[in-house]
Image 1 (tube, rainbow, N blue to C red):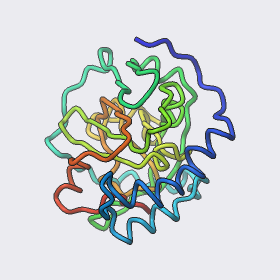
Image 2 (tube, one colour):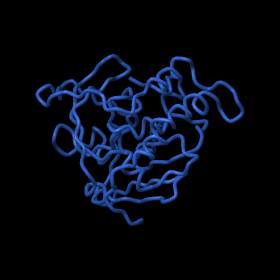
Image 3 (cartoon, rainbow, N blue to C red):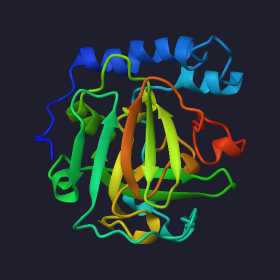
Image 4 (tube, rainbow, N blue to C red):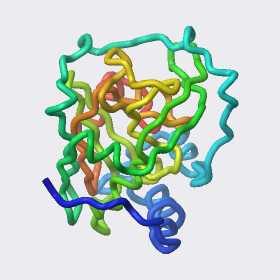
Length: 234
């Protein structure tokens, strides 16, 4: 396993490179055109990417949590994962590939947030998620300057991809807590994506691998490959 330490605060230069100036470059260039210059993002998705703010979105008080409103959707049922043997891999366009146990991840700073989870099917629920910021994990992995996208592989075979600016948003977590308790298996334990800036189908459960890439691959996401919107921003 790669040696890890608690990440220091990300420098202003890194944030400007990744989330500010980097976002504008991605939106105006890579997110709009593929490597051979063909239009690859619909205008509405391009606009969503352009409007993405690197600042936190408003959160809710704990008293507003709606546990009964959170519907459990699954792709191929709930996979069986032994949390004591689980390892999260971070690979791809990074200088320092990682393989982290849950104990490694839980030693990192815990971020808790109460946000609205929005499903494309029309329902929503206010949920408290707790976990590690993805940008903290990427700081340890050290993405290379060409990094622009991040893929997520799940134990049930589900797959997703995000733009880097959304991944390093301060409210994008790999969560291992829900409503102040350990994350239930059916909700994605031991690790799942949680963020108020994306629709629910982007928020993969049972995440086992994070792969940083310089370009989008032909398979962009399970639902996206069936016709759903790729950026799926809120």
